[in-house]
Each structure stands twice: as structure tokens, then as C-alpha cells.
View 1 (cartoon, protein in one colour):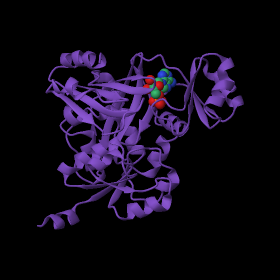
View 2: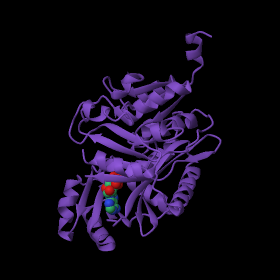
View 3: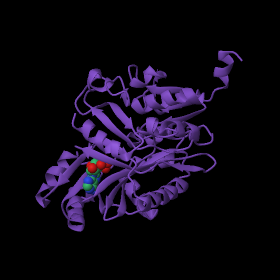
View 4: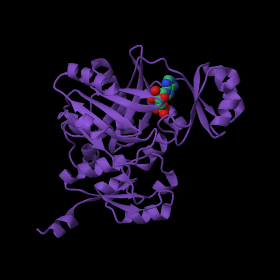
Length: 362
Ligand code: AMP
């Protein structure tokens, strides 16, 4: 078979978006004999590993034309307008993405599925906000329902006098008010569901955020009871949504209970460690799931991942450690921007804690 014949037989997967998640999906696709093409803008970082076509992701016709040339499409972000996603051969489905991109729908859906959350109230006006403060109490967080990521679109309220300024700060758009959870830890569960309904889970991961941005993930978060509980919650969500692909759920751990904060209908930053830490990475399992193949095993080693925010550390600083994996997304340095990550996987959990400290001390 010639290279050309082989290429013609390969499934062609279109990714809506061409950032670092698309880049790592494209990198994973090579070993799976799949072709990945991204819809983004020239200069997006996925271009290092895949063809990137210039497509305006707000333009439904342009996205439909791109999808026509693919066997199927997937997303690297939930923040694509629901109208644009209609009618595409899309995995995961548009219904699941629609819920995950709107905080109020998402929180209500968690509750419908029997999953506890922080107390919340819908806010569409300053009156609603004042009423919500009475119901929920303070401190609380006002979050825009849409387009929030890395702590953007969020304002903390300490006093009821903060209401008017908080409402102005979020731009008077539909919001959700949430009670502040005094959590013991933040964890996430990542799972993949295949077309046959088969589900694989990764171990729970402990996540550390600063200024709303994920800084460090440590796998595994060892707690048998919570692992089982999180897997049960995940199974309900995946099955109710008829979900295919990778789904991530972020939880607060408080008094031995799990409160769901949000879900991401895509590969997730707290799963980047699986590239080196698991038998099959989240990127491979997402591609296997959406292309209708059998899922890969998720046995894992203790692993720590550190996000590089703003800029990459100098090569000289990291190259002295042969066991430290460096992922540079090739993005321009900019304050607050995720430009890469470092991963260290070990045989022992103790080594992970030592590395967590070393990496955080940078
Ligand atoms: P989010 O965009 O909802 O993931 O929020 C970003 C980060 O803000 C979370 O990972 C938490 O560290 C913090 N946070 C968000 N919501 C709450 C809450 N209800 N209580 C306490 N911390 C929160």
C-alpha cells in the first residue's frame, strides 16, 4: 500500500480549535494512525503537529464546510456557540457541550444527577444578586454563566455592600452566585467513554490553583472511597449525556464529600500528566473513543505536573533532570498564559511529593 492509499483510508478527525489541547491531540494521533486537521487561525500552536485551516469558529457556515471534509469533529474548548455545533458529526455531542458551557445548566444538571454542589442561585439582575446573597450568605462568588475560564469572569463578594460593584464588574450579564466552599482539596476525575458504552477512568488527581489558574496536578489523589464515589458520579453523567470521548469533572473535597464544581467536555489540563504517567494518555483515549475504537488501559504511575504560566523556564534549568519531561507549546510568553508544562513520573509517591516541592519552589 502506498503512503497515499494509507492516508486515504485513515479516519480524518477535525478539531474545532488549534491551541495546546489540539496540539497534544495531534501529537497523540500519529501513533493511532489517524489524521488530525484543526480549525483555527494561522500561527496557532497546533500547527507544529497538524494542518491548521483558517476557520472562524463563530461562523456556522465556515465550520460546517470544514466539518464536511472530516469524518467527524471534536472540540478543544466548550466555548463554541451552540448554533455553530448543530448538525455536525460531533463527538462529544452538542447537548453535552451546551450544558458544560453554561454554569447554571451545568450545576442544575449535577443536582438532577444526584451530585452535590456548592449552594447556588441564578442571577439576572442586581435584585436577583441581592436576593441570592440573602439565600446563600457571604462570602460568595459571582460567576458569569458563559465564557469563564482560568478564574476569568468571577468576582468574590465579602459584604452585601459589594453587590452593586460586583454586578458592574461582571458586565451585568447572566450569572450564577455560588457560596464559597471551604474545601480540604480540589480534585478532578477524567474518564473516557467509547461508542460501545465502555468506560475507563483515570485515578483522581489533586489540583492546586492560584488566581483561578491551575498550577500543579498530583496523581493519584489516594482515597479509595472518593475514587469510587467520583466514578459513580462520572458514570451517571456519561450515560445520561450519551457521551462519547473524554470528560473531566472538577470537585471540591469537603468533610470527606465531593461537591461538583464544573465539567469539561474535552481533554483537560489536569490530565496532561497522563502522557507520561499512564499506559494510555487522555489524548489517545479521547481519539480512540471518538473514532469508535477500543479504549486503552489507564494504569498509572505517581506523577506530578506543573503548568508553566507566562513563560517557559530556561532549558538549562530543566535539562539537568533527564526524568523531567518538558512540553513547550511554542506560544509567545505573556503574563497569565499557559505556555507549557513540566511532568515528572515516578515509581514512588514519596518522590512525587519531593518533586512537587522542587517544581513549586522554582
Ligand atoms: P472555576 O472557574 O469555577 O473552576 O473556578 C476557578 C477556581 O476558583 C476553582 O478551581 C477554585 O479554586 C476557586 N473556586 C471556584 N468556585 C469556588 C467556590 N464556590 N468555593 C471556593 N472556591 C471556588
